[in-house]
Amino acid sequence: MTITGIITAIVIGAIIGALGRLLLPGRQPIGVLLTVVIGIIAALIGTAIAQKVGVKTTDGIDWIELVLQVGLAIIGVAVVAAMRNRRHGERP
Image (cartoon, rainbow, N blue to C red; front, side, top):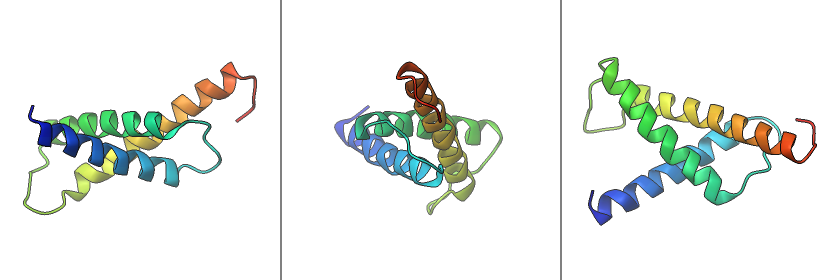
């Protein structure tokens, strides 16, 4: 992986993570760095799932892939936020 690929993954991860966090109702007690990490993981897994189910890669925006990625980011943010709430004794 090149430095450009790493930077691209971080930027896309930040966007996917931010969208996931934005679309999840309520307050999430997680930081920006964790949001980016969740977004990167969601982007990678979402891309793998999209390729596995036969979503074609296009020159433009792959909307189905994007929806998968953001959906996974929402789930990831919700799971991490719930784990942090439990650890700190807060209710969701």
